[in-house]
Length: 184
Image (cartoon, rainbow, N blue to C red; front, side, top):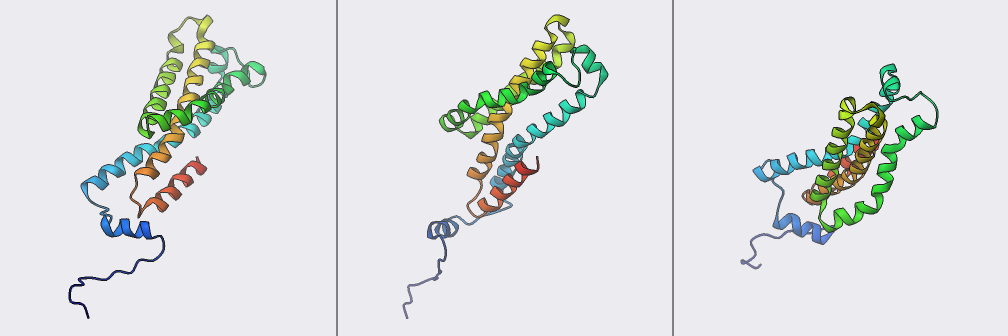
């Protein structure tokens, strides 16, 4: 028997994955891991914006004050256009999503999307203080920016979480990320 052998480990399954676990075992409660969990929480929240807007806008269409101020009804083409500006913004963002998050990275994609969402929110919320003739156009522009930003943010956030998680947890994190997208 060889006395120079300190420890023998058997590797099964994906050899590269097992080698990574041997070289860098996960430390789930280290300072770096806690910072990573906080960053992952922010990136997880990127996929929640889409569901919030749908529920918020549906409740606005039920309010008589909203319908009177924006001169819309519960049916008709104009209401459909105002309601679909969010989805139009999301569709227009499709050609920009891949280049933005592949060229500059996932974090920059999250920043671009969240900045667009904040600007869209500001534009929408200031319609109460605008001249009444431009209110509907301003509201639709804000909805367009919201849809554009959420499309980029919702694509970059879950990928960032999966790519930055430790290989030992990547499968679980991917499943949680996908589950969160599906329920929202």
